[in-house]
Image (cartoon, one colour):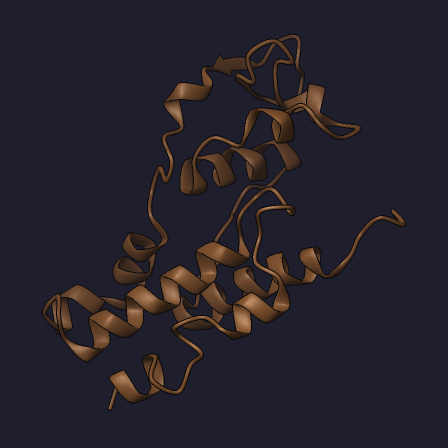
Length: 157
């Protein structure tokens, strides 16, 4: 267990849990660490360069020269995917929420359901920002548009 973990890991977990509660699906579905990182890149886009080379296991997943992703458990035999193949955001969370909850099919773009889905996607996105330094704090997450009284709860009425 690392001694430098703080509430940022809890914020990440909360974001993943909120997505699961809203959709009944896991946000990231990889079976291995490498597949999980690949899923994160597909949904959240490329990690910042300093972040993708930091950490004890970064070299297993990323090329230190250009932050290309190494897809596969064996770094020597892995498929190398250039960082540019993961635009930010690669697959916006709103699309994932809408797909899982059929928000767009049940309401128009300006409807209360659509506004609530956008606010929820914003909350989840700020919680699952890969770099802990850029991730929401518990206080900023609690101040999100979705959790404000004028946010999703009143918009959905």
